[in-house]
Length: 256
Image 1 (cartoon, rainbow, N blue to C red):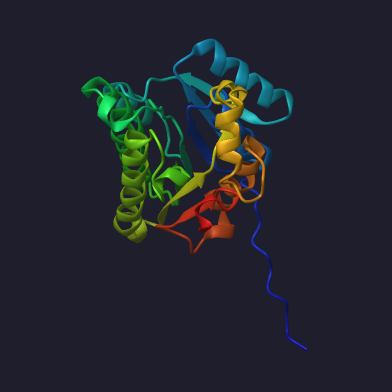
Image 2 (image 1 turned 180 degrees about the horizontal axis):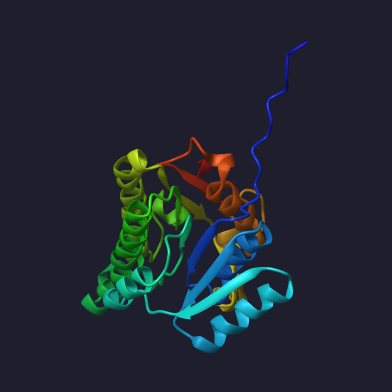
């Protein structure tokens, strides 16, 4: 018999501090709730004060440790101030993003700037400023970037979104190499279509919903709960040897 059985790493995050952008609702709120339930002290960030305050209070009611801050992550001066005013975080969920779906021949420069500036530029500098603070204070941890299955394939009317999410994948891989000597990991989560307050109206179009379900091999639209365990895995010790990769949570969309 072996002297001792290997021990499964804990998914608990007690004593760790996390920050989630775009945390007022949808995927961001689910990520924040998951981290708080695992014992992390979570800072929720979004542009809307009312929404983010209500989200933080809902987590506190369930016993979680939270604080909240209004922050527009496209305002890089404000992002610098945010991270400079706080001790280093152990976990970042880089979640804020947007989309302007339309055929590529209809995309305007304004569309391009809106999608790429938030989905890529803001994500880059949020991660950079978070990581700088971690390095300054000798904190190890995990950067989690919310990507998409559209960062692995193409999609109809998704030229800008695909461009931003493919770039996010490359960004994260390069971050992983740069940050490995500092004990900081960088990974993405790449979901399929997830039902959120933002996407739910789209699924009221039966033809659109049918087209999505035809590509998701498991036969259902994703729910925010489907991403909560992947967030916990990448946040903590269970993924200690994972960096520069992507957890694709797509129900089989990219399998063929």
